[in-house]
Image 1 (cartoon, rainbow, N blue to C red):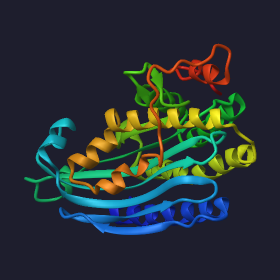
Image 2: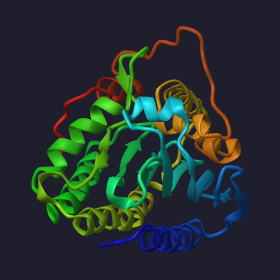
Image 3: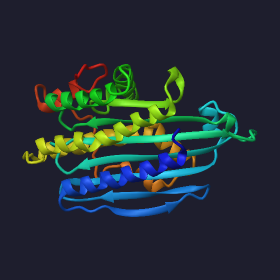
Length: 304
């Protein structure tokens, strides 16, 4: 059975591998690493890149532990506990509006009842997912993205993709705008030993998701990186980044968890773009590419 040490070591190696591949793809930018320690226990490595392809990207690793704050234990319906959490989180904001924003997270979380004298009352689960936020939705790219995720899910359980795809549609939803953040992907949380699935099987699935990230994104980069764009298209990109900010600050549970557990603010807000715009009461032109994109930012689209 994989231990928290085994899982932590894997996530560290995943961060290293993804950073190497992204530096090679960018061709100019190099990751700057910022190691940090959490006062309550643990720490991490925040890595940020700015290059000729990526305007701002972050690939973060963390492994933190300590006493679970009462606010979190209540939300998770857990007794007073000590917790351990580790994972890798990625957000990439490209320079070109022809390239999509992408987010990936894989994580492991465990708690031990503070009153227990052994690991008998240990609770564990995995979480994570990948979602894509194109500034302009290209149906062929959206289909490739979802087909790739479905193939990765199907290697482990035939219920994963439909269940996690719906979960992503529901989760990455900007309620106050009544639109999805992008074209979704997969999202999963609290994957424990239910349904007779072992910890090792859950871990293998999470590893699979971590390792399909680069092949998927770099394929989309290769297809679209050389496309030209106008100032109007870049302004649209800045407005779509604004929607991304709104979701992350208002609705994202990961952001709230990090701040509520006294996490490192710079690392938590790594997902923010370098520039975003808000235009009052902006209206798109009927029949435009912007209007088409907005029409596709809704739940339940069968991209496969």
